[in-house]
Length: 141
Image (cartoon, rainbow, N blue to C red; front, side, top):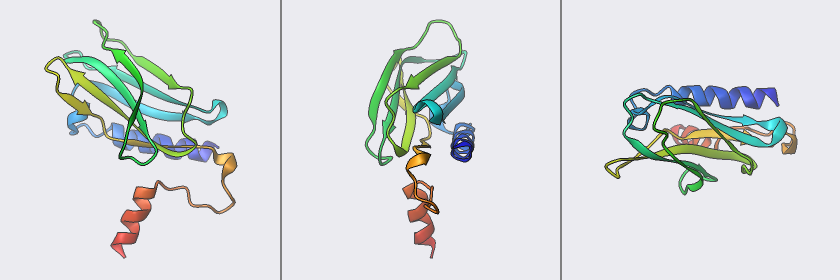
């Protein structure tokens, strides 16, 4: 279980650290990570001090294409760290992102973060890489 947690955290750090991403403009921090022991996925973020965000949508997807909102949160008037827990995550690979609805009604999306839950259901030797990474690798050859 620890290996999957580590892989997902590395993905989170890689994607969340994409400071040049438009979706990170109003965020100081953004992390998504699995809690395999409790079958949960946690989203942690810190809004920027100059935030234009009025609403956050926390979203998840089975396929990294169609996203469902699992939590909607009004932006607080003061800046503080935020944490939300998805108590009903998908099993296997899923994809998480945050949509930020601005005061202008424009929407910004964070980079998508792949998360894996359900290590105990894997067969020995099964590949644990999100589908999009496998298809990119196969396209190269």
